[in-house]
Amino acid sequence: MTLFVDTSALLAFLDADQPHHADVTEAWRRALNDHDSLVTSNYVLVEAFALVQRRLGLDAVRALAGDLVPLLQPLWVDEELHAAAMAALFTAGRRKLSLVDCTSFELMRRHGIGAALSLDADFAQQGFRQLPALKTAT
Image 1 (cartoon, rainbow, N blue to C red):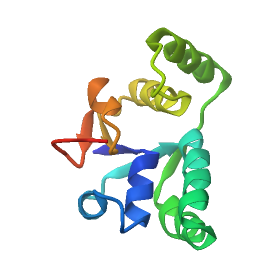
Image 2 (tube, rainbow, N blue to C red):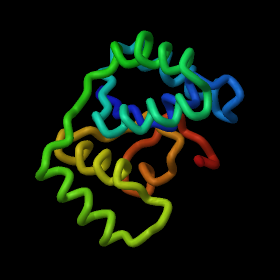
Image 3 (cartoon, one colour):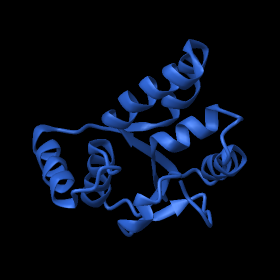
Image 4 (tube, one colour):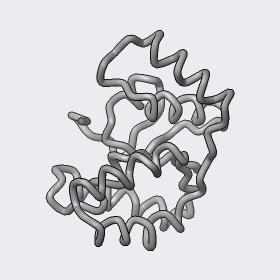
């Protein structure tokens, strides 16, 4: 199986104080044990590096860069995909839906990826399987 890894999962994996740290860690472990392909986007990586640096500091950024990113295959957002994501963002008209989210959804559709390692309920709302399966995703 191919899993799309979202910023929320990367942050929760690195931050033991996050509410779903154990759930994400277990889902990550299971994916690696099952030899699932883990993909993300260059937009998610930029967002994750900025968020991790701001919340957790440079040591956590080093862990992200050295331990997690090498396990991920980046999918690159090109000009066409960026334009499609911008259109989706404006069409949705929701303040809490981000451009990064919209690029993730579009990449997943284009690459036939049906599941995401994410704590963002928008993935499930867009019809993707969300791991870990949580009763109340944030």
